[in-house]
Each structure stands twice: as C-alpha cells, then as structure tokens.
Image 1 (tube, rainbow, N blue to C red):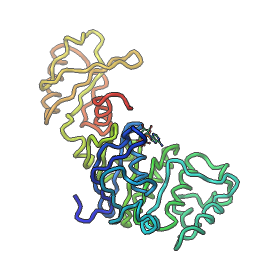
Image 2 (image 1 turned 90 degrees about the horizontal axis):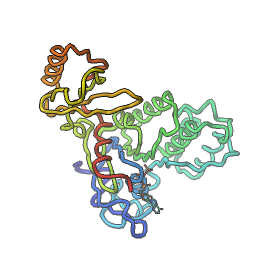
Image 3 (image 1 turned 90 degrees about the vertical axis):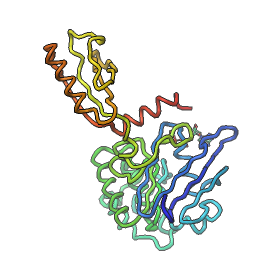
Image 4 (image 1 turned 45 degrees about the vertical axis):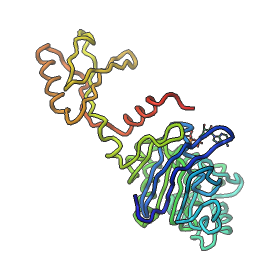
Length: 311
Ligand SMILES: Nc1ncnc2c1ncn2[C@@H]1O[C@H](COP(=O)(O)OP(=O)(O)OP(=O)(O)O)[C@@H](O)[C@H]1O
C-alpha cells in the first residue's frame, strides 16, 4: 500500500445490465510506478481502465486518480492524464502531422507536434496520410497523442498490439523513459513478456476479479520450478520416476511427447539429481532437457485454467 497513491481502487464493481464485468477489485499504484493489468479475454481490464479514465462512474466501490473521482471530477483530472485507447479514432485523410496538430488545438499547454512524433519515432512519417500507416505505426500515433499534454498519469490499453518485435522493443524504451521521468503508467497487455519487462507490479484478472497481484517475483513465487525433456522412445510413462515427490505431466505436440515436472519448493537441484541418476541407471538419453523457474506465463495459464473458461 502506498501512503498517497496516484491510483486508488477499492472494491470496484461494474455492471453491464445484469452482467457483473468487474466484481470487487482493489489495488493502488504509486507515483512513478508502472502497474500492468493482465487477464484473459473479457476479464474486465478495459472496463477497469475506462472507469479510471473517467468514462463511466463506478457501480460500487471507490476509484481515485490523483486523489479525485475521475468521473465526477473529470474536468480537473482529464488534463493531467494521457489515454491510449485500444482503438484510436483517426481521420484517415489527415496526415500524421495534421492529426497531431488538430489534437494540440484541444490540449492546453501541449507539446509541439514534432516533439511527440519524435518521441515515438514517427517524425519521418509526418507528411504521410494516416490511412497509409501500418497497424503498429497507428498505435505509435495513438501514443504520441496521449503524450501531447505531458500527462503525469498515462493509461495504455494494449499499447503494442500489432507492432513487430522491433517496434515493440522501441515502445518499451519510450515507456521506460517516461516512467524514469516520474510518469505513473497503468497498462493492459496480452504480452506477458511486456509485463515482465516493464511492470513494477502487476495484477492478473480473471472473470472480473484479481486472482494474483504483486511484483513478477511475488506472482511466480510458490509455483514450483519446471524440469522437462522429450519422452525417450523406449520408456513408458509409468516407468518415469517421481522427482522430489512430483509426478510428470505429459504433453504431446506435433507427435512429440514432452514430460514436465513441477518441482515444489527449492527442489530443482535434488530433482535434477534424481532424474540424471535414473537416466544413467536406465541408459536413457534425455533430449531437450530443461530446468527453469516458473514463468509469468505458467502462472497465467494456470490461473485461467483453474477458474474455468472465460465468460
Ligand atoms: N458495453 C458493454 N455492454 C455489455 N457487456 C460488455 C460491454 N463492454 C464489455 N462487456 C463485457 O464485459 C466483460 C469485460 O469486458 P472487458 O472489455 O472489460 O474485458 P477485457 O479484460 O478488456 O477483455 P479483452 O482482453 O478481450 O480486451 C466481457 O464479458 C464483455 O463482453
């Protein structure tokens, strides 16, 4: 808990008719922190972001951005926040520079258009019509517009969707620089690597509730280490040993079977020792042997699977 959080959400609930899309979530984001909201499709991330952005009042619970209710006090809050929506609405016949110029007209104290286009690496596209931009370039234009007002809080809804890996890494660099300058950032993403790379803290939402939250290390802690290898041809599943008390799970992909153990506690070394001794005794070669800590993806997939299919 932060003493004076920039974003404060306590017991937020949101409904669409009878359907409860957000079912009582709480979290805080401190100044200069990057908080990532992850989750399955339909988990309630965008609904949460839109509530924080002031587009709808909370059905129940408390939401504060910079100490104010973002819906009721939106005239005071709006100039201090930058919003990059999942789908920006552009006029396709305007150029990139014209688009930024038009937005500037509505943004008191806005940065020069050339400055924001430079920030997101679109300066070379200034004279190009929006319709001629690629999907990833349009996302960068969205980001440029969100930065016009020098916001102290930035909401990024799936900011790198549609970007190639190079553009995604470049965008991560821009976001890191903004955070280093003290901007508070809240983002949603389906790219778990994005959260691993950027987030100080994160929450995983599923079916309207937060299932896990904390730093990446907090979230993956207690989810066991993974030891895996390709099933040796002449070994049957029942012949595989238990490793540090863990039984193997077998996954078949493209005709190739892989055995994976989730070894509890600090059992990776002991488990590996047991496995290698067994392989030696059986005269088996373990192709593709890997040992690694649990990843955010492991925890995410387990969270999604444990609670049933998305609503
Ligand atoms: N305007 C609306 N009217 C009715 N239901 C809606 C509306 N907007 C969203 N929902 C429903 O609320 C739930 C949460 O939607 P939301 O867009 O917040 O999820 P999300 O986590 O952002 O999903 P995604 O990752 O797919 O973007 C979904 O089941 C969705 O169908």
